[in-house]
Length: 307
Ligand SMILES: CCCCCCCCCC(=O)SCCNC(=O)CCNC(=O)[C@H](O)C(C)(C)COP(=O)(O)OP(=O)(O)OC[C@H]1O[C@@H](n2cnc3c(N)ncnc32)[C@H](O)[C@@H]1OP(=O)(O)O
Image 1 (cartoon, rainbow, N blue to C red):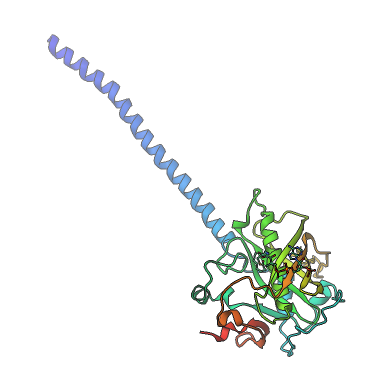
Image 2 (cartoon, rainbow, N blue to C red):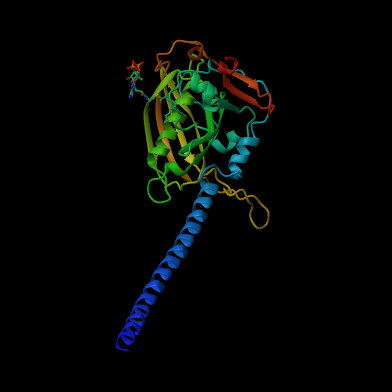
């Protein structure tokens, strides 16, 4: 009798202490599953939104960029004017006036676009500013006008250009300026060849922080060509107007002064041969042609004709 009673007591004691223990474990497992699901779905949401927002330039470009793209579609023949006067400052028109003129040519280098050709011809990496897969600062288009020695570009500041939270590194803006100064000098070089020269001074004044994801305009010109020294001035701005591509309430386009993010005073030395390669690629020249796809005038390197 006593033994049975002891057994009953011990069974009920075990039950009463074990059941809450089991319930605790079940609760713990359920909570951790719930927690994991919530966190995962949050992470999925944030990664999908960041990939759609940041991994490519926006599909709709701001109005200034659309204007740049649509304003150079004329197919007038433009002489490559490497024989432009090498003297004092040009009377280049103001950037906004210049955009409405007719002889802008898109600048294209094969190594920016054809990555297999690039890899097969001595390049060892990817261009800092012209990598079609780049997520830092990426120049989407350059247009050059030989008669006024001007160039304009559409630039995307991608997620890998970040420094302060949501803002771009000053080095990204300065890299862009270096690129602009160098390529504008190459376009104007007396050699008539891409990569003929070197940037030796890039004096950049950073005036406003650039947000990650911005599309901005770089516009500038050669101020002076003295001997082998080519002086370049450029401005990084938002292109003015309504930068969101929309219009005001009454349907009129807004014309605001461009917001300036940075300015450049640069110096390139004409004719310097930085790379030691001696091959058909190093002997390329600039050619002005009508693009077979768009029918638009473009200034591209003769390397497009090489294998
Ligand atoms: C984002 C990056 C992508 C870039 C893409 C676009 C490419 C743009 C081109 C580049 O960025 S090239 C890469 C960065 N630049 C360099 O690495 C250049 C480093 N510097 C050098 O290697 C030598 O300075 C250089 C080979 C350029 C010197 O060339 P030279 O030996 O032919 O020049 P020289 O020393 O004879 O000087 C010629 C004139 O330039 C002047 N000069 C040279 N370097 C200067 C300097 N740093 N500052 C001011 N003036 C300079 C020099 O005083 C002289 O003036 P004068 O004719 O009045 O006597």
